[in-house]
Amino acid sequence: MLVKLLICGALIFSQSVYSAKILGLSTSPSKSHTILAQALFKKLAERGHEVTMVSPYPLQKPPSNFRNIPMKDVKKEIFGMSGHNSNEYLLEYNKGHYTRIKKVYDHGYNQSRLALEDPQLQNLIHSNETFDLVICTVFMNEVLFSLADHYKVPLIGFSTLVSTEWTNNLLGNPNPYAIVPDLFLSYTEHMSFFERLINTVISICGDLWYHNIHLPNQEKLRQKFLPHTKPIWETLKDVSLVFLSSHPSLTDPRALVPNMIEIGGFHVDAPKSLPNDLQKTLDDAKDGVIYFSMGTNVVGKDLPESHRKALLDAFSKLKQTVLWKWEDDKLPGQPKNVKISKWYPQADLLAHPNIKLFITHGGLLSTTEAISRGVPLIGIPVFADQSLNMAKAQTSGYGIMVDYYNVTFESMNWALNEVLNNPKYTENVKLRSKVLNDRLVPPIEEAAYWVEYVLRHKGAPHLQSARKDLNIFQYLLLDILGFILMVAISICLLIYFVARKVTNFFREKGNHSRNKKKKQ
Image (tube, rainbow, N blue to C red; front, side):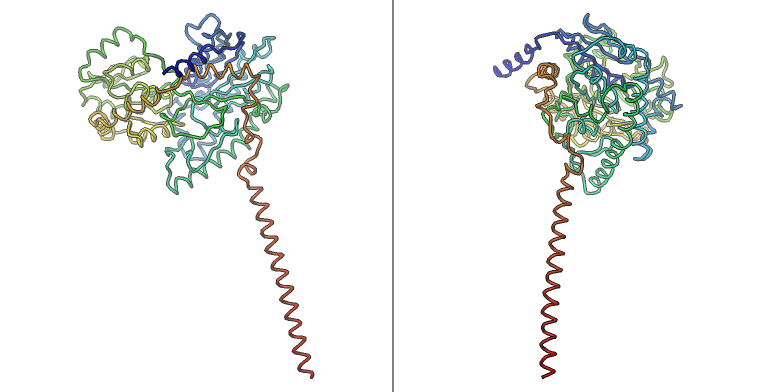
């Protein structure tokens, strides 16, 4: 215990000798990404650094040394370009693997372009302001990394996901297809032969698209908006460190290079007091409460009518109170035991002892908060890593996954009764909660330490892996195997031709001897 306290104290008080000016970029249209980034940026401000955050979602009640640079609504513009509501837009990613890869990277290009076109960011770029460090979320937006070269400062990446091809490529982190499923597949680390085959093909296709289509498109954006900076392929090699929103209790354990730091759960603080009316609702629910939210990207009011009816029919059969994050003033067909609100303080709400179940889209932010608070899950995945996260929950016994296209009264009624009446789900998630919260130091303190470590050591180049300088052929030793194969074939051919020559020599000599005897 004494050792833990000493290490924790060292991390807390090992601040840099000066107050650094830090530029934080969280330009993703996904609000959940910014919620995570804000937790890190706010902590750095509390430690005395001057933080400037560029984001469509400004931090409410920021510290005095925290400056918001609010962007236009990127999410609204991207969805507007698609001609769909948010749910339809996200569901389009599930129409086959080729469509998924294309739409994912189209999304990355559009969000990067809209960010660089934003007048607020352009004003900052063309001002005389300087910074000591750039921290940028990693989400198919590599062109924004060029701002670190613009300011000639170190660069830290912040991923709201587990290690992915986007982060692995930055630091040369190993990504074995045999045990690391693609972000969009509902596989775990234990894959069958055919799952490994599918995972390998999809992962290779995604990697080829990333290097041959996505990065060249990002480079075109750099040439247009930041032409004075280095080519993007060189900037990607300058990433000092990447934070991951993962942890072995949340996702599969993975091999990580030393400058890839897992801080999953860092944003979950000690629970704060709830609003009086919400506190009363939770306290008075003698049979418990079920919380239902589809996150910040999936809009509940845009669910198909058949889904809404199936959910409400299933909820009406329950004795528990259901709190539904519903983005409208009215919920048609609302049963008496269902209460709605456009917003709930999710992490604090989940900490209440009367919460029995969390129905979620399965995003990493939500699943992390549920595990931290020890609440079992029913997941209805829609997009990105949500199926991956819920597959992990299901195989680990703390949740059930319901396919979005199979949301019926029967499927939801079964899932609700299974999780509510089978104690294994609660027992398993509470065990996971203990693992997640059993840390040497609080993860937010660890994150702050590594930011200041990079500042102190001028980008910490000593942490860089040589893997990032190797292409895929060199890393997989395909060039070596090709050389060995070429040498082996050459030796075999040499042996073959020598043996043939020797055989022909003795055959000719034998024929000559026989002919000589015949003549005699």
